[in-house]
Image (spheres, rainbow, N blue to C red):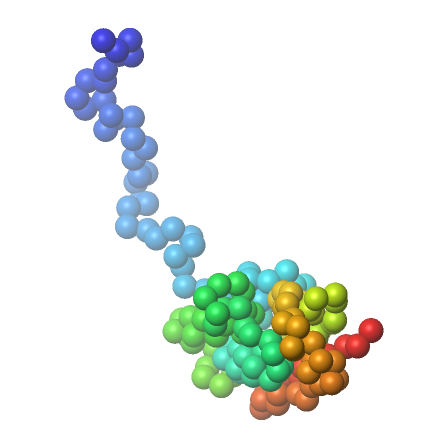
Amino acid sequence: MSSQPQQRRGEAEQMQPQPQQGQQGTAPAAAQQGPIKYGDAFNVKGELAGQPIAPQDAAAMRSAEQSIPGVQVPQEKGGGFSAGGFMESAAQYNQAVGAVQPGQASEAAAKQGINITQDPVPGGRIVTEFVASQVVGQYAVAEAPADKAAAAAAGEVGGAGASGAGATAARRNN
């Protein structure tokens, strides 16, 4: 026997919150179709935070990610985070809702660029991704023993240019 009283038929429906008059058929605020802005996705400030993520920004970031020898973009390896991969998805969404045009670059990225740096640490390096001088991604890359000599010889890596929003990649040797 249970010691809790059972609800009578109909009581459960009466206890459910009912939509108020005039609210039926409205979509939740999250479903409204506004652009994905840098400030929605990344911890950035100022002019960049209010700008929608644009297709050229995503292409420049992806190009910079792919230009760094030995860096395997985590998203392509079945896990992890890639700012370029996320930016591509956001830019596609922004195009679909009409917030940006194909090939468009954000003003901040076009002015200040997109870059990636690598900082050596024991056993690997830290890769930091920037849009308009603000960090949008950072992750560690472990070095395989055979890769250490090649990485040390590589020095600075050239940029990956993209029209509109330029992209560069550099290795810092501290």
